[in-house]
Image (cartoon, rainbow, N blue to C red; front, side):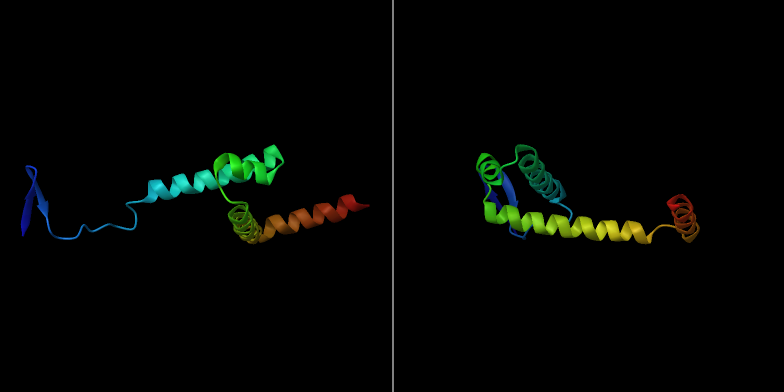
Length: 99
């Protein structure tokens, strides 16, 4: 059934929103949060940085924990992706240069 309101035809069916339709908003949110982390590191004062961007310090520290955990996990994934021959060459080089 269609409804008409101020010359516009409206459907009474609910609008189907796909999961990917709000990706730009998600990216913007992620970008803002990463910006806050960088700003606090550069500024050197978490509380003042949070005040400037209107973000609670409690939320900042939760974000920082999640960010650090994800970075650590990414680093572990990177270290696992090194080819065996490269790892052996690096270890042999390190042992050789140790003396």
